Length: 379
Image (spheres, rainbow, N blue to C red):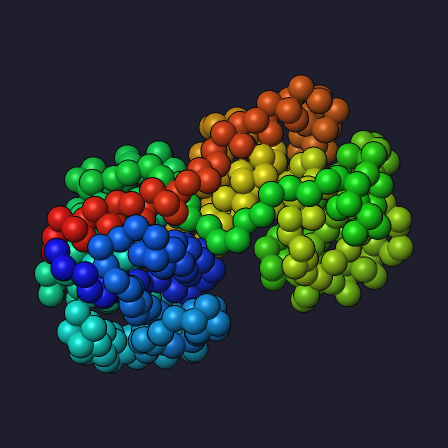
């Protein structure tokens, strides 16, 4: 193999859970090529939808993006949902043509698919053009693209062992979920000072994702004072921008509750947390495991194929989390569970160890090593 430019196509989009792993892989491959590869350089071409988060995140990271006019199938019975589904065949045809044309022009050595409906067309076209494909799956229950194309992929990288049972004929490898820019914990005192909290008081960190989680917010608006009274703790609470004023109005100025619409300094938030309460999205769980935090997980019930509950159950099975379904929040089950965890130091420690045990800090490196092996084999 002579020294040349390695060309990598990556397809994934819609949410950060699909985009961040693709960016992490690309950035690690850049470092790999610079250090130890027979290739002189590497060029990337990303594929995504023309309206997802990828339109912001990928150009910001300095990569080229081909946007496709693809949309997911709407499950809504509204007029807008009907129109979206009516336009789907035309959008699909345009996406196939655009993806195929750009793939032939770019001529990649390999296609990396990280999921989301925006990745289906590029992955399909890569296979039809005899371009080797690898897939990266973030969730315990594999997404549609992974289930459709896993058997034809050279390798499928898994975050959870539980995903294997749904991919009978695929070449799978348990690597963990690739991430970008995850720093180490900082001192608890420094984190507490930043948020204006007490470093000596146990802290529950409520996080509904960057946009918040309305059902979680509404529950804690009603119950936060009771939990503080019963358990002698404090709360760091990312409400999301849409619910911040609502939560602030009902919670008031309790010094043991720190409300924030969005937390950019997540290393500080994780460093003061003793227990997480959050959804069960793939990237959130990867971060929680990285910091070795126990959690109570409330899966988003509307997540595609209920994948968040599958993720949460995998964490629970490992001993890292307990699961409460959203429709159980109003049944009075949360306080006994919270009490059982927060008042039992040994249990909290065991859950923290189990969470740290799920972390795979070398996930990105393992994926890139395998990609390079496949490229060298297929070249």
